[in-house]
Image 1: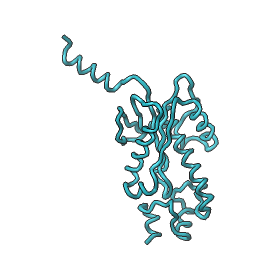
Image 2: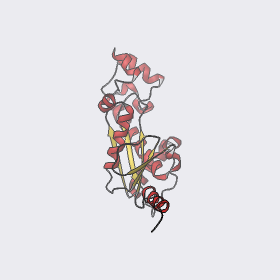
Image 3: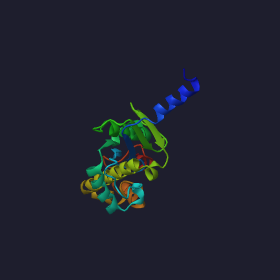
Image 4: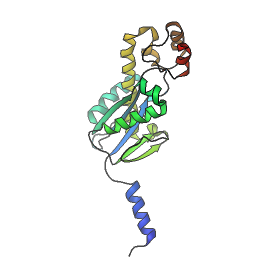
Length: 205
């Protein structure tokens, strides 16, 4: 009969090194004053590697766009999901981010055996998951997810800019730049501004 120590080691291996598909998850849009928070989940295909994956913030917009198309074409599967402004205001930005992450994982066509999430917090999932600080710079699947989420959200900002050009969403992507804050003071808030974020709250008083 195997010793208890050996059994515990074997069980730990089975739990933490589960073979199977691994999904990377990341988000974009926690900090802006407007728009949804977006999360993506990606399961890469080892037989079709993608060169140049990195933290989306370290890439040019043109490079992100090219990688976005390549990831969509070569990944085994991927999923992009949102949590709306209404959900952000109701739940708070952290909980809304975790909700978007859970939706992204649940939207995958293939069920992963393990999920690797950028950061230090995990959404509630029905699969094994691990949070990895700075994972977007070290784990290719998380890098891919960060690119999908960033490009998707940037496209959302460009589209919304056409509807509300006075705020300049295409340029600042909803972040609290001097130009954005000036536009908020001049025009008030639009329907996509996060009412619970301080600069927006101030103009609503």
